[in-house]
Image 1 (tube, rainbow, N blue to C red):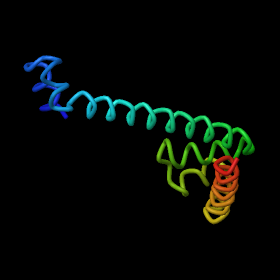
Image 2: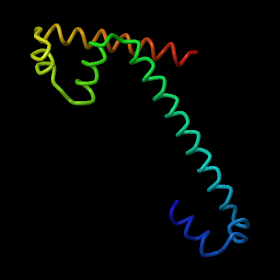
Image 3: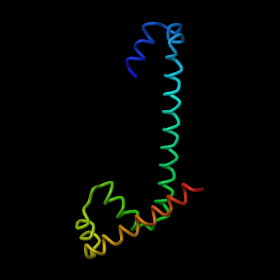
Image 4: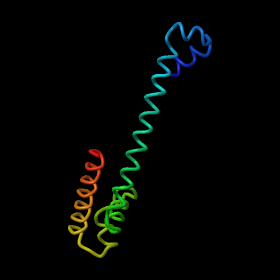
Length: 106
């Protein structure tokens, strides 16, 4: 990609058009824009689905996956057995996955 841009810059716009380089670069930019829009839509959908979870479910998911806390650490903080924490996280993930699937199909 960088080489293509450098060649285009040195040769000038007329040479790039003759070589078809502009259409390649334009297609790549369009694909990147579409990908960014898709990622933005997915992030918005994810946030909406997270907001539907209970406050506790949101916290355990965020601490487990964003902060990197272990099951044991989370269980200790919550004052519950480790197996209970694992179950809570599993149920929250199932709900989140279900909501994300519904959002994708809508």
